[in-house]
Each structure stands twice: as C-alpha cells, then as structure tokens.
Image (cartoon, rainbow, N blue to C red; front, side):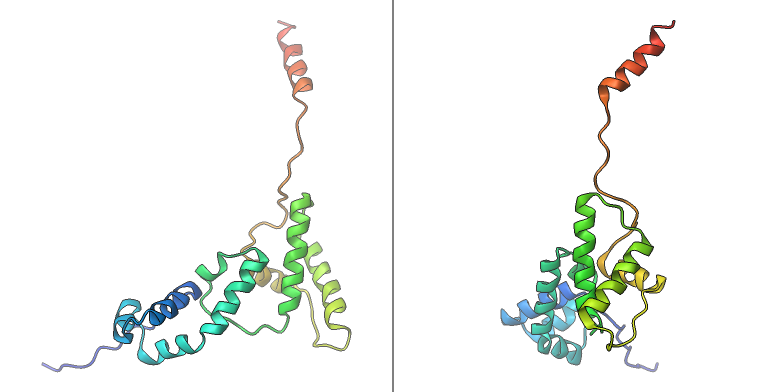
Length: 171
C-alpha cells in the first residue's frame, strides 16, 4: 500500500479570522496549534502575522465608514486605485439614504464620475463609471437595492378612516 502525503486543502480566512489568529499568537498560543485550529500552513500563518498592521488598519477604516461587518466577510485586502472615491461615494450614499432620497444606479454612476473629477482631477487615470463599477461598488459595501429609500411617507389615518366609513354608511 502506497502511503502518499495528502495535500492540505487551500483555506482562505476572513479578515476577522486573521485578526483572531494574530490575537491568539500574541497570547503565546503555539504556532502548531494555530495551524491545526485554522487548517492553514506555516507560511500562511507567518504571512498573516506579518500583515497584522494592515489587517488592523483595514478593520479601523471599515468601522469608520460604518460597515464593521465587512471584516467578517472580506477575505483579501486589495489595493484599489480609487479607495478615496469609494469612501467618499459611500459616505454620500449613506447621507442620501438617511435623508430618504432614493439613489438609483445612474445617479450613483453620475456622482462617482463627479467625485472622481473633484478628487483626482482631469489628469489622473481614466475612469468610467459603468454598470460594472456600480455592481462591484455595491458588492464592496454590501448594498443590495439602490432604489430603496429608508423613509416612508406617513399615511393620513383620519382620511383613511373617513374613506372606509363612507363605504359602510352606504349599506
């Protein structure tokens, strides 16, 4: 019987899990225990420990933007070309949402182009606010339906009651 080494399955941890690994390592938990607990290799563990500062900074940025749940789902930190644009656009989106103004895809893309010109100027990398940009932006910030606004119109309960009573008086 041939005993071959079984290859370990590739595991990608969330940012939250990576920060948990860093916390446990600081509490002097053995690396071998961490490797077995999280099912990661030695080099992966060392990479995580080296990137602790970046991970902590990422979590702080997402908390500042009001999306602390991002660290529970995000698995990789990507260096985006337009990080400032994303932050500004998300802050604007939240402000509009709190006012009760519906924000549709075309409105979001128009604002993205406007903010890009203001932040980076005309001489920066070319930027096109396409439907692909909108789709990825919504994915990065966990937005589902852009046309939904938080506030609803209040109903006039007195008029509604009179309307209903108008039907019952005709019986």
